[in-house]
Length: 278
Length: 117
Image (cartoon, rainbow over all chains, first blue to last red; front, side, top):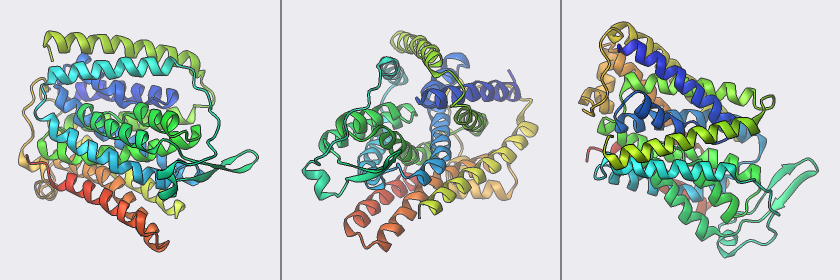
């Protein structure tokens, strides 16, 4: 296969990943890496480098629209970025010592977890009224816009959220994903942030987290221009289109399809990792 | 402030995407016909992994270096965003968050400049 043909196929695949990622809210990064490695036989390290770049592009592109709406909690974001960027630098440091087979198994497990989470119904929990000790000290409580005006909310479970964010940072760097699924878990479940606040703040943080390890990977030669450029442009344009048709498309059905794809990829990543074919 | 952050992100992404489009098109013209083989990880040459090498390649109009320049701009976008957040906490005289944001910014710059190991 020539470089031109490969770039074209990768751009098309990444475009699809971007559309699905935006429509399901799971991000495209989680399927870009399996796409590149399983379908196109690209080395896992090049795939991780290219995927991280696309994660930064979609996160920043989407965040540009979100910040103006007033959902993003900048204090929570900055505080938790301490955990994610530290985790990301640690993950980038560790990745040199971990075999690609081990990484593939880890990737398979994260894919399975993503599929499991995406099938769970997402309930809007009651907005917390009392902050915890840390939240009080760090002034994390804020307000967010609702149809009936600005509503106050409190932040709980700060230590648990912070720890989960550290894990999210490590995974992001090791696997080249945004790990939005862990970030939302931390903010939604542990810290009891309102739904819209946790998704937009998570998105705010994904780009920053990915930038921490992308720099390291650039220097290490993981970012191959011939692969990174079709991935970045494909995912970015796909995500922009996905965000635009979000209101029109039937997302429940798409979510099921997406979940099925993720499970198949998970099994294949696990199989290749264990058999040692990566 | 939020408006400015939004604009900064938009400009960063558009600018880097523009540079990547130009570099990518040139890359296809220059190397498009060669066989693609990325099965084995070889790493990249210094010319594509260091800021100095990339700057040198861009001046020589090497398409691969132009793509890398676009990607460096993209990686720099969230870093610039954190820097802008620092400015806004400074304007609010919020010392706690000035300190926290400085640490995050320091970690990011460390990641950008470190990494030979």
